[in-house]
Length: 575
Image (cartoon, rainbow, N blue to C red; front, side, top):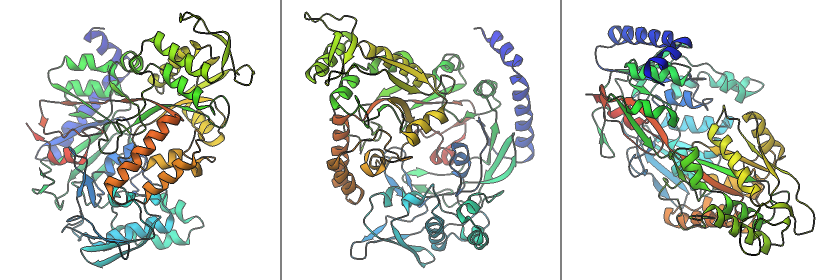
């Protein structure tokens, strides 16, 4: 489609008016609010809340991540945790099972001091009200104590590996801002619900920016925090700013409108992952720069191990063998993804185990069918008409018979609908065709995401499903939740119903192992066991593709998960 035709289509959909208004807003705010450089960023949606305890959606976290800060943060190149609001490494006392953290001098945006009392208050609030988003990372903390203004000590009930990677990366809230609210929350019939529904208009910031204005449905204005502790300092080898006076976060509602604004120069960055279909036109624009980054995510095929034939590991291995991941990557995702052979993404280099079974890897379609057929035949499956004849020739398999002599029931692969995620919907169709090559009666069924999630996680009424985790923690403790027997319950994270006492023991040991090298060996064992038993078939990890204007700002920091990170917003500067 030629550019003129595209612009006409955009205008027909009312997008031109959206971009025009965005241009007016940007011009007004750039000239009237700030004298220095201002970054204009396009969003699809606005935040659901500015309440740090309640914020679980990505749009809220994009804003609050510029405001509330953790004690430790991931360095972008190594992904190692380095001190942020903390001054140095935590000091461990094995005798009393405690960690002591010294805080760097810092202030909140209201000019008051950031102290150990703020850290203790944050942890105690999470513990008292069992704040869902953070409680799992604090439940093993016995006590958090402010020793002095700049020293905080954490006492643990038991060794917990995630203390360093998750507890210490929790965003810290200001005690002064929230302590007047807490007594009212405690008196409520449902204290947690009361805490989560508290409205926050102007969060007090310890980060590089402060929220100045929010016009609902239109834009948010962030200005540079004059008290930001990192200003003109070097942390983790990175010299920090910010070198911009503020950020305009403009809400567009559609990707088409945001892309048009980016090309017109109305915005400097579109803060959302792009579908490959947009890239050809964007690459033709010399003023646009494309970033393609690995994500920490997992998209997979899951089995219901609570029922046959999925309770048979041979059947699961045969399914894993016949799936052509190269086809999924090249044809469905147009090359913008990496193959997954583990539950831990390869970009998570320290924890990812490279020595795993790779079912069907490098085989042609014919060879995959032949190998899967051998696996099933050896496990006593039979067919009215086998998919491979006596000479090894591929035929049309029909009516597979279970080892007990019963015909296999018709199976269903649940996927999200194409308008929600076309990649997963199409992957379901292809898996359906590959299983039919083995004579397995199966059909792919798109289902509204909420209904699919309810069917799989709550009711456990399914055969196979294709889902994904778009933002996995860099700490692989999630493997315990995904596959530990205790999580095989209604609404539990063990959706496949995998049960293995040996795996449970290793998972529990890993959760209490504080030495990183010892723990990595355990995590690698867990990955090997999962890929031997294949309750999930890992499929792909999509690339995170983002676009910015190259003619206005430079200094974007690329790391796992994309360029929309704290390091970028502290380092970008005008060209």
